[in-house]
Amino acid sequence: MQMKKGWKIFWTVIISLTGAGVVFCIIALCLGVTFSQFEKAYPNGIGIIRKDYVSFEEDWDDDDDDDEPEETENVVSGETFSSVENLKLDISASEVQIKTGTDDKIHVDDSRMKTENAVQKRLSDDRKTLEITTKMRSSFDFKNVRNVKGTLVIYLPRDYKFDQVDMEYGAATAEIDGLNAKSLKIESGASGCTIKNADIEELDVETGAGSLDFYGTVEKEVDIDCGAGSVTLNLEGKVEDYNYELDSSAGSVEIGEDIDLGGLSTEKSINNGSKRTIEISNGAGSVEIRFH
Image (tube, rainbow, N blue to C red):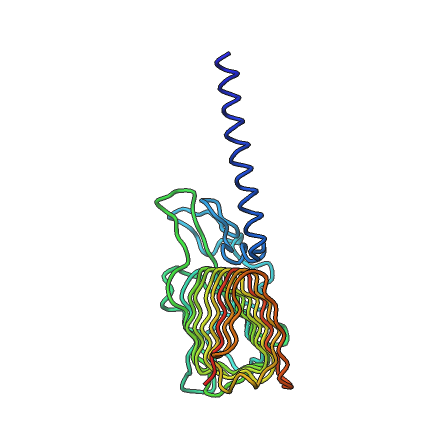
């Protein structure tokens, strides 16, 4: 009888916890949080066994064949590049800095990374796209858990303009100064990103629980999808330079001094007769656009 009573208590607790979890998930979905945003906020999973991790011991061999990329013909060992039209960054956990260099080459400096061989640099077949990624490793032994840490610095030629820049950050932080591109796409998980002196034609931002502070010019379109994080744009010009398509679930949207959306499920369209449009979809986050 005591055993049956124990199992009854056990299953009652399990069902109660499951029910509570379902309720919290429903609340999160109602607030605008999506599964893709959760994945971006925690790109490597939660717990000891993490997504895209490989285990290793103290005598880890970095030349192990199992750790090599499937396609190695385009893996670049050098740190200087030229004639690159597109840049792709996939950073799991570290600090990234993009600065203006002193010559006409793109320099990738990973000497400040604290994890050996953590950065991979790869050129596309036509050598027009440079992809930079960081790897993360951990061990089942708590004493040997190691994550990619340190600072990755990328130096760009002055006034260098990309066709397309794609940035995806997990738990990383980014400080960018002097970025010019026809198209800039930012996917941010739980990271913080600051971009200064930027000249962009089209800006696409998707953030989960992270933050973005942008200072510069956007000549055409702006598309912001904010989950539970914060996005602040400091743009050159004035409010009337753009049309607006605004949708905010439970967060806040502030544009200039006169446009303020708050509360639940607020939508607003503003047509200023402009050729440029700012589109904002906000869940439970905060979006602010300032003009100067």
